[in-house]
Length: 433
Image (tube, rainbow, N blue to C red; front, side, top):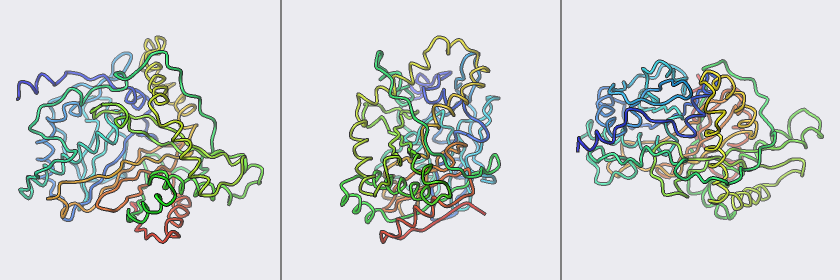
């Protein structure tokens, strides 16, 4: 087994298509670092957590890497070093300074009953992050409580061989030439909120029971994600309508929400690296005020039109083609670092007001359920999109997790008020001190 495992270990890994972008645009304001949190029923034991990390890291050789600077692109190089767990002492999702090649593209933190794993988005998306976190939790309880689950669920078997498909760049595998690019984005409404100081990042989570929200979504003929998205659109629309600006200006606003799509649902990929694209459903207030029913129909129509393999191929092809453009490939890395953040701000975040990502239902083995209380997932900080949301469901409870680079709370207040008006209780938690 060890011989085969060594054969799977590579000395270096090219960054995937999304990773190329994330390393180029990373800054102290836009760190490209997202967080996954699990709350336990007892205080975390740091020594056991460190031992668990040491036990599982060999199973994720594509994460046991440090970032290296080539002349044209960054790349990841395998290291035999072992990451160290740390007690949380600072704001979440802070910059990972990877330039010296001494740090990992993720960090494992603990604080009281919480385990946090923060990932640089250049190494993996939420699917890969969850696989790592779930594997870590299982190993932690195996060492701490002697619990050996019968069913690992979506966690990795640390005694199994590494499948090369786990570190495949699926963007390149499913790239098709000669597919036209998707239409360009239009300018949309952005929150006029004052930014926090660089490095400061606020988290706010509303915990709600899944069942009543799911029943309401079904009664409206839509999915849970579409229903939450509709409430979010409605909240932003209400905020705009209450702004002290002219009616003419209010009715010229276009609201778009960035919705990541996990491509593993459409393509037979098992990669733990990045494999997603984002769609931007929108409402245009120039067409008038939208009722909730109209917003739901708008979202369903949009998703029905664009959530298919043919349309998704346009995004994959555009992204891979841009990376392969000869003039981009021959530009030195230091020049790319200068202009890519500007291009991203102009053509990326310009096209959406906020973001909403649903990671779906997270489970742990039945034997661990008494010891695992909740899961939360927070988006990476951003200067343009000052407020974003990730949702994740565990044990019949839905966590609606906001990440903010602003101290303003008006949007969340409107959003959670709408949920309470539906007769659904909300429990709020925040890291704001």
